[in-house]
Length: 519
Image 1 (cartoon, rainbow, N blue to C red):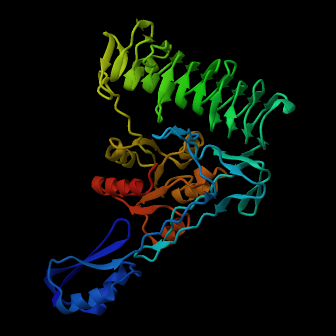
Image 2: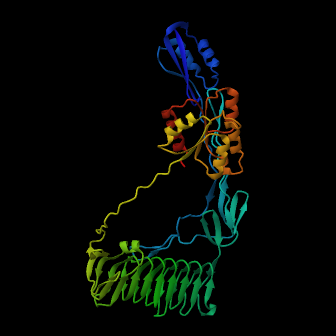
Image 3: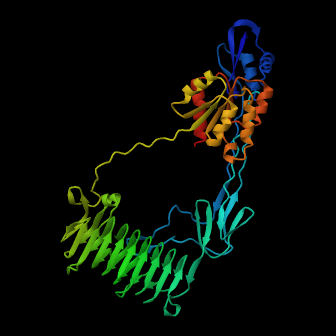
């Protein structure tokens, strides 16, 4: 086959394409093809089989991929493995349909010496190469931030509890909190109990005993006519026999199988219970009596957001008063009384100052709106739709560094619609900007006066600020000599692009980069 050889090298130096033009009378051989590739400095990723195919049966004006680089393989950042269940918020027990309470898991307990976490170091990625046999470095894998350990000891890469207690992980704080365990009843012989952490009573809390906890209180048995005060949650597994004197107050949730004849029960958040009888209840959120009995009978039930029960009152007309009251507009808008079966005669209600003297109804909901009190079927109430503000997509910030104002203007016009773009005309100005704010990516020229792009990237990579040192950088330059490219690639740029780079090519490269490396 005869013709003229044409060779195109990709702008990222990762692919080489060869064409045979019909004009010319040069005999196309494997040796000639290799010679032409060598003249252009192409040494790596050459497809010998494709060269033989072109020499033997190549067709004019056909594109052949004759050499390919290998992209860098991304490493894996360091991470912590935890050997206990982590939750974004404290688990709140729920009432099952049979009336029992599902408490699991509420408090995560560990024993002294338990392994609670392990650290897995970062694994660096694998370098790739260009068709010029230049190294393509992967982005450096980052180590995880150091944990702030409280009552936890680090031994090498593993972490162990230093005492029995409650394990928690929030932010970067890994902590075992001391928990007071009472192995039996909290009775008269012990006197009143005050503890800054959590308290777990494995038996009952007897009449006239006061238990105060800065954290949560958990009682495996029953609470009689006692006083329980908790900064967080109160959980009573069997139930509360109030004897007309029990006072139960929690800053968070209260969960109990039942509440009978208590003097007052207050919760900063919700109360979850199977049934409440002859007790005044006040909650900052919702009260739900939705277990097997699902009953609210007698007393005054006050909530800020929702009162929900299977049945309210009884056939004998026991007086049961329901009140919804709050100063918070959102809770007021969502406020409702939900009855799944029946509200009996003797039930009265007040919704944000609007009274219902006799709330007798079968399954349904009661809401207060700008049109007054409205009743509807369960789940049928619909609020007026409020306009939802469209979320503003966070755009990546790109820093352009080039001493040529034409190039800066051109690259800015290519990118400004999809990215936040800042342009500076020198390496010194780039350093000033980096002290104020770190971009998500830098497009960096090499040939600049006083400090070239390679020197600037070296300053970045050796910065004491780890986040600055890991800033992704693409070279965009006209410098194509092997020595300079090799020197630059040793500084771990994410790419080396040869000018000029067209709009579509640049946008595609950056789109692929941010898809693989979301901000």
